[in-house]
Length: 365
Ligand code: PEP
Ligand code: MN
Image (tube, rainbow, N blue to C red; front, side, top):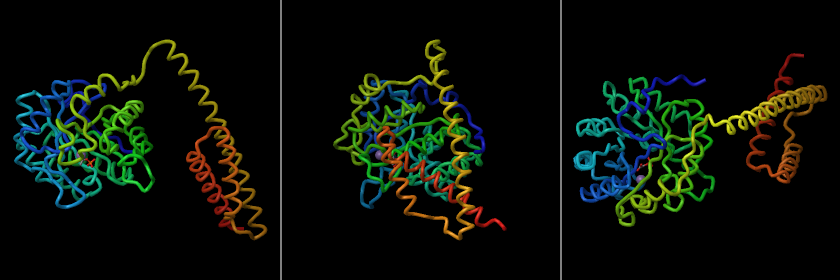
């Protein structure tokens, strides 16, 4: 069981005015004062209240545009002044945090490459101690939930209580049409462990291409995540970083106001309540049946283990297992069950069955 986080609710951060969903938008990078102010003006007109722009950019290759650095911070102050927006940027060191504090940045986020580095997270946590700057923590680039949680814990230990997370997908060897594998399973796991932790999705960095931003945004809302961070630039095609994935503020407005369906977290509506309760009751019964079946199956595994032991036979019979799995996948497929799901389900059952047999083999006579 995860340790509970001691959090100040995001409704009390003084950053967001709308919560369903919360929206953060702005360019990947602050490039010039004119680009920042023009984008902010258009986003403010589109109804966005929280502006993002990367000041220091972690780039894969050297020689790419690495952000304008601290001279860009006064541009964010202009955004606050001229459009009444809250502003946030990425901080990757104690130096960045201090520069943000000096320039009245309202919130920071920790980037995916930084979350992956406990030394840096520790350094940032140290710089935040005693301040009340809100921090959103992006997932690490690899699909390592513990590394993500570790970053949250480091911030907590430094006394940071305004914490949220941003799910931006993972680098992966699995072929996906997107720049990053959404790996929603991990987001769901984190959400389940920390239901009160404000949870954003970053469909822009997941997508890598603006054409996928709507479907990934919708997916995040379907899962009931709390907010979206979306990259938006006044002239996306001329952007110095992440040009392919940025939307114009006008496109963003259409997405937010016309294309996305916001799901309710819950409702007291009578017909919905009655039906959902019936459906949940059916699920509960089926889950109990599943438990019974698993119990019986493991009991048979124990018998097999005993039998193999008596006849001095090795536990792992890979040919038998491969044939069984192929058979299950074929039958499951005919029933409309997802192959990946069957592989991981039967993989877990097989692993447990081997463990049970191993225990029997290892037991004293
Ligand atoms: C960004 O938000 O511009 C960024 C660099 O994102 P990430 O850390 O998710 O790659
Ligand atoms: Mn970017």
